Length: 151
Image 1: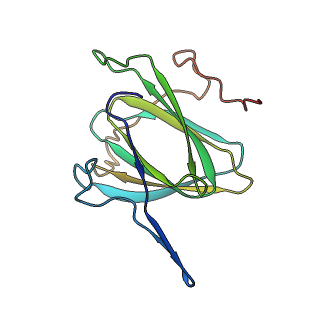
Image 2: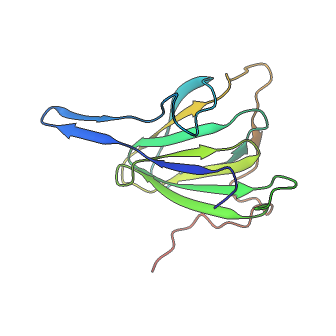
């Protein structure tokens, strides 16, 4: 487990009308503050990565479909520096993943349909000076292969 990353199992309450799923509450251990909430989508087989933030933490939930979320710790002085963490989340594994600033992350849609990922970040997006630090999905800096791993 990469230091500072937290995985919270989400409470899903179904009834005959549908279901309710709580994602992040202000009394959760991982809650720091609210910046903004947004949804991004990703098509089957597509990789969105890599990026990290220096000023914000992310709280990610896949609300439709399934993704493979991969984290890479590149923080100076971190006891888990250079570690990779791979998680599967979405409709079949309802969790929130707290991603601390300085940890690179990316995801790949592994479902047959478009995946919808919600992020509740601790900071507002600054259009004039975005806190987005990107690397190509196939960078040599991060030792990770996005291809499917058959068993």
